[in-house]
Image 1 (cartoon, rainbow, N blue to C red):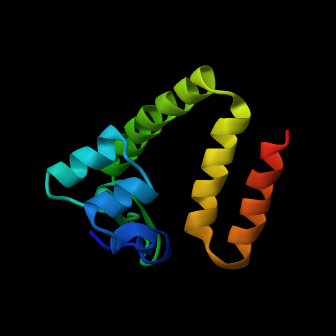
Image 2 (cartoon, helix red, strand yellow):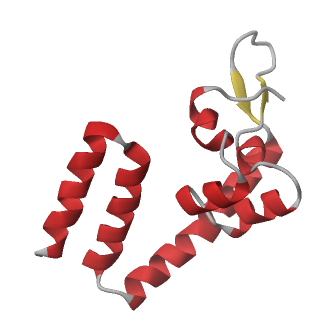
Length: 119
């Protein structure tokens, strides 16, 4: 298994609590940490493409886990929209994205979240 560079580096240096707070607290991610593994190691696990020297693809285990991860993370999102006004859900998600983005992108996203307050 090769460790991914750009995409996988986004949260790989975070401990479990930080990763869950910033990125994902899904059953898949918390379960990976509980099992002593980083979720990105599992979700981004890859292997060489047969007959190729440079191309890589997800392992079947990673592809399956990504499918389950998607399903487990969509459910709370749908429930949030059912339980709260859409503007509140969007404002919270935009604020979270702004905190992750940093810099100029953060200011733009925060401005968008502020605009939703008046909607």
